Image (tube, rainbow, N blue to C red; front, side):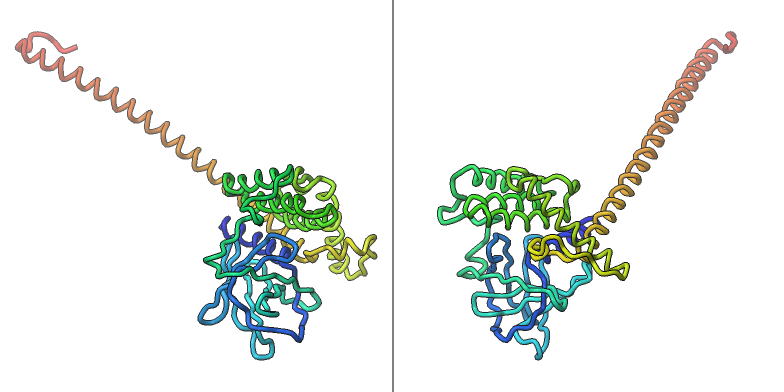
Length: 321
């Protein structure tokens, strides 16, 4: 069950990173097999054709996409029961696809295809660059550090990979570009962070960026609460910040609910484990007491038998004690 919950959270993270939307565009083309990378980032997916549609392979799961129908050519859809949303892939040209959440009014995100077949062009957790390794420098060293952590600490691999990508971006981009990308990564990480107040990797995502991402998330939650109450949300203090919000308010609320459910199930599991340990300890104590009593009874019987043997050997002249 915990694995399914982790996959649920990972599915919501994917939607945020890929963007959301279903805006209809005139241009379309068949989706080609290959590995696609998010424009301006390092997140990648692999697309393979199947007998009925497409198989989209992400770092944490495989998702079967089916044709959307004749009225939506070159478009494939996948319903995720864990999140309750339908996601789409749409071909633009031989090198470009759009990934979106099939909700009216949202904007799709484009991914570019890398050359070669998926088997011939495996993608590392971060773009290694022409030399096969991140560029030299302090930020590149930070990227290497978190890339190594993603291997040595598999339980938190997704977080460390994201931190590595943010550090790598800072090593090859301008400060403004790196900050923008770092903000997007921070928004993603806040979905799974145990402590949403503190950045998990301050040398890759500074606390100042983390705080800005938190402010954007809080703004989205405020809008969702206003809509639920039937009131009009207050105008955003900074329209640019709202424009950078890649995760809409209902997904943020669902992520919070999933996180709370995970915590409750972990607590219940820990309580059950403790009860099982107590029962095992009680059983062990009772077994030891039983074995000690059995040994005492056996020793008494052996002493009595020995005394009776001596009594019989003496012809019954000695009275047993």
